[in-house]
Image (cartoon, rainbow, N blue to C red; front, side):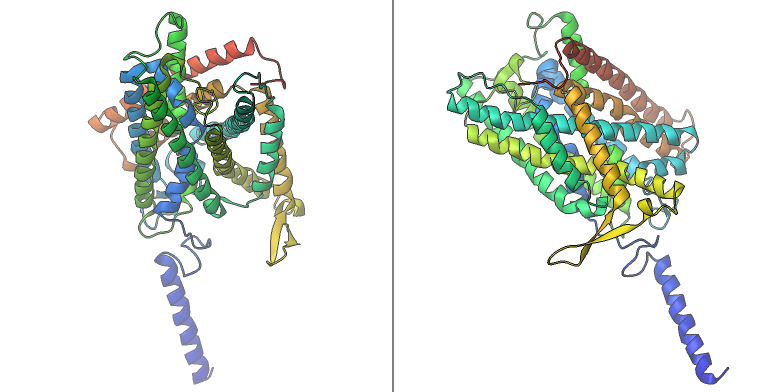
Length: 485
């Protein structure tokens, strides 16, 4: 070997050392420490994802929920749910990395975090609850979007007939239209490329929440008094049994309005570091939960103040308001645009799970692994994966068909909130935090965390019972594929 070769080898060795050094300190300029393309998410993109997920159709049922609970319990329950959601989300965010919060092994999904911290049967249980919930949210959002689209049609009909026409509208065509749009958007490959859709959806959520709030304030001014009572809807308007079941269902509606923990880890995986992803998500959660709680309190309370016991199950489509019809049209269009984005935010983790499982089990199947380059005018090309196209299209079709069979907005929302709140928002974050921090059994902190978990379990069971009772009641007067409003 010549002297020149020695120098070259030495330089190459130095370059290799620098490369290792960069990777050990958080990756190169183009790649993160796990070899994946550099993550670019910030507090604001994470907040947009969370707000898109949180301020969903659930906000529209809060006036009804407040009406069931009254002026004391309604706002108190909303505040308590917001506090629990924020606190447990910080526990969950701390589980994104195993070991060191800056350089520890990443957990890309909720299931990965449970696998790293708890293991065993709990991993499969978490996956089952999480993905069934995500599927359920897709159904719930399809129902909600169709109701808003019908509301636009009805508002225009009421306006043209001076509020005297029947104006009945069938939900099926609107659900199909929403499904077609979701088939197109579901071809966005992964979560990281959804930031622009989440931003638009977050703006839309503020739009319709503000309109709902404004209409509520106007209605209170028009009435000249604040409606409602300290204990909620009165016995006589409903029976004692209905009062109990409706109060339980209201808990489920509020729980659903705060549910985003099931996609928190996936949102966290889009965030850049340093600072640690846990710190960024803690800030994003505080911003998001504070903003949403402020809107929820205003929308729920002013909606109840405007209508009292007669508060509609969906503030903008229950037709407590008929005019100005164009403002209702804008609000309901904003809901639909928001739900298009929210559907994707919730479904992307489920899409990714199925596609990863397919590649793992069939690594040599070209249909699953290969992309087809589709030329795009004015751009280079789009990588179309045939398996992604077929599977995601089938998924959207199935959720649309189920939505046509179960178009009960309030009861479905309450049931989803009840089923997902305790296991995903409270139980798993608490158990992982205890395991990660090695908190001794029967210590004061351990007892406090378990008491919180038990209290939330009782609330979830009560909410599920109330929502199931509501679904059973709805089924007595229901005909498949012929729902109209």
